[in-house]
Length: 150
Image 1: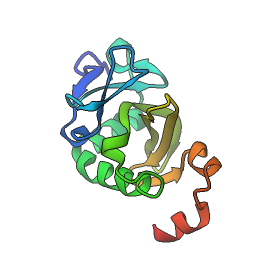
Image 2: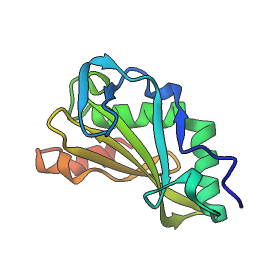
Image 3: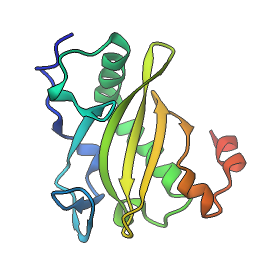
């Protein structure tokens, strides 16, 4: 499928409340709310630069388009285990559709940035967290208890 219909820089209402990032995407403006725009990548390549995508990548994008509100609720709940107020403490950097796939959908990686410029990457298949960020576990996050909540 041709991707010229997909823009790599999109408005996502569900990101509202997170902190704004600078133009390089490597620093948070902690006192400024995001404008709601972020980049979408497939295997770290901007979607609009791709010549084509496979059906599993397209399925992941369509799933995100139809369910972003629920996905961000799940992400915020997950991040709340480590951050008192994730939206006020983190910037949302981008979405990356990965080449790994299950059940007809590619995994989707959601990338957040902390005030000390640390990336937090959370992988989901559809709306299920499958690989929490290792950086949260380094800080004492209890992996077993988290998965028992799901």
